[in-house]
Length: 109
Length: 116
Image (cartoon, rainbow over all chains, first blue to last red; front, side, top):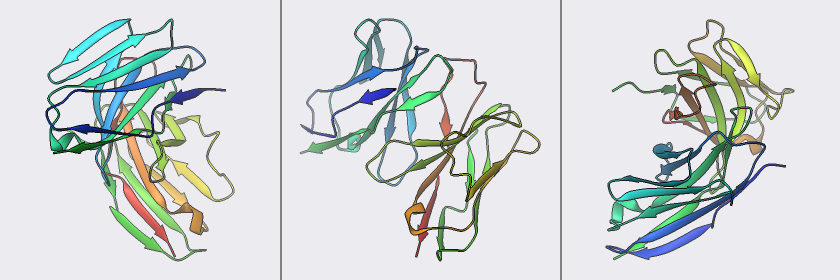
């Protein structure tokens, strides 16, 4: 079966750095996405990785290792507004999106 | 900025009643998804369209759920009869095309359904 694993919940301090991991086992691979979802709202796109390595976008970076079936989202200079759930999704060989359950990130002052 | 439109935002219905949700994707987006999301979980795909054709409805409870996208643009998801366990957020998303792997899906604001 297809599976995506993320930690259920993480806590970090305002101004700090946090890394949210995602491991996946899917039928093929056509890219990995990270989305942010605030409580009661729709997911919004953060990043896309299809090749190994690091993609940087402002305070957010995403890393991919296809051989390890592993990705992480790195958030720097954390702000209170970063409190949200972070969803990892993989597009499989049939171009279907497989979603993780999300990681709830709690930012403390 | 173009966005995915969904209505209604909130819906309260009694069990055994019928309920319908509407979605208008971003103009030019051929792929449309309907997801159900329960609090604390990731989105669960119900049905995926490429233009007016169903690509995947393997997780759609077809005894009570139906979806259509007649002209390949907007779409309707219906539940009849609604059950208490259907209470969830129903999200619609769209993307340019199924085969463009690097195009992200854009989500609408969702419909929060409560069945009482």
